[in-house]
Length: 354
Image (cartoon, rainbow, N blue to C red; front, side, top):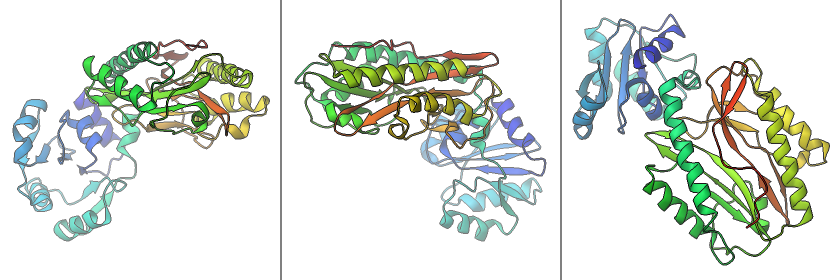
């Protein structure tokens, strides 16, 4: 798999002699090394170097195959220059979108003028998941689904939003996850109108809507799901918007297939919500890619011209948010296929009243 990924990198631009990889997730993707503060130098002629420090030498040797592991001893770009000289390489490409200006300046000072930003993002390559990645993401999704099922037995009036987060964290860690893939959103009552309402010490009250948006990390790969539940009989308006959001999400998922533009999928859900007068209450994009990062390419947004391809994994998460009343969001993760999509998230989307 690593060979294929590196080959795709060099196929993107025939001018590349060598590339310096600095983004942590891309280092992992192209080498399988899971540590921190490490870099890759890859050459078109097949040489592969992982530059790290003493803390990670042993780990790097165990996790990678076909890489020369080098302790750069605090002299990163001097080491890079030596490697380039040894391989008679004149130019070096780097992830311009990832380096700070100060790091770029140091690189230019130590290596010289023949350094160029990549004309593309390595993240674009990562958008298409291979079978190994899909299996790891499926495992993260399974843990998340089980955690949601578990938390339904925990939520009741008097329990705080923070206590819900704590219980979710305990459950996912106990079931094999490394931790949350992002700070969970638990927003109840009127706070559920906050699309990113992270948990507080607010207590759950009777008739509250509770938005729960969370995910976990399994062997580096992430999951993301949202469900909205009710504690006691909800307001009629909340039931109405719940059903609208549910139907909008279903229409979008049924529409997804390889070859569509991302904006076309977003439009399906957005237009349906707009039919009921709630267009302005759905203010975020329909979804995003998930993998080694919680927000990856592609983006299901009104502006994205990106074409969906088989084995891209995206979220589908329409929502309606009404200030001083509450909000509803429902989110699944799906895998794009040639003739549709496969929904990975298995948690029910039927109206839940605890």
